[in-house]
Length: 168
DNA sequence: ACCCCGATCGTA
DNA sequence: ACGATCGGGGTT
Image 1 (cartoon, rainbow, N blue to C red):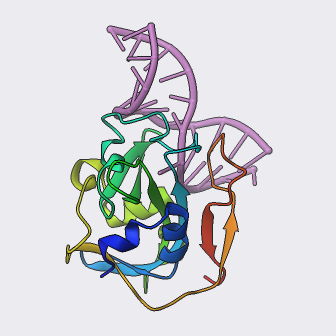
Image 2: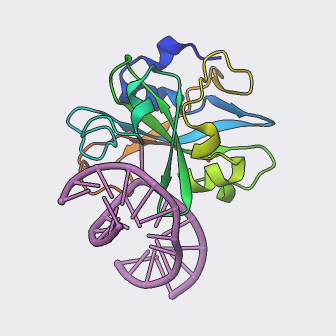
Image 3: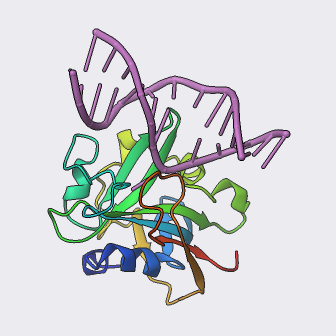
């Protein structure tokens, strides 16, 4: 299981290194295939860019905790908080490959939450460190990946902070 | 109290 | 490339 110190690293580095690691959620487990980094400072696309609000509060807490938000009136997105306590940064988990599950069901942030059953009501602010039911485990894999602009944002497209495995 | 718009998805 | 969709966050 990845320690808290892993998630306390710079957010872009965490997003990179999460590619190929194993996400465990209840009965389900799979390899993370796509991530995006969101930074408090100098990143207007980040929910925490304008300071703490009820929605983004957990982003400002300790690293290694889940941040789940509701979007477009019908989808949830799952993030893992990064950096030191007090800094509003996180990595959005955009996709994972689960054995015997068609990738089309887990290859987007909304689809992934829908498949796993992740909701803000139940899964926002969950501690992932030392949690056997919900955590990220090291695989030792370092698969090749592409770095691209992030999806669905207006500002901050100049940052290549989306990471996707090359061979799915 | 309310308005606007979004870290999406599916189809064209 | 674009339209559907709609709850709720953020500001009034």
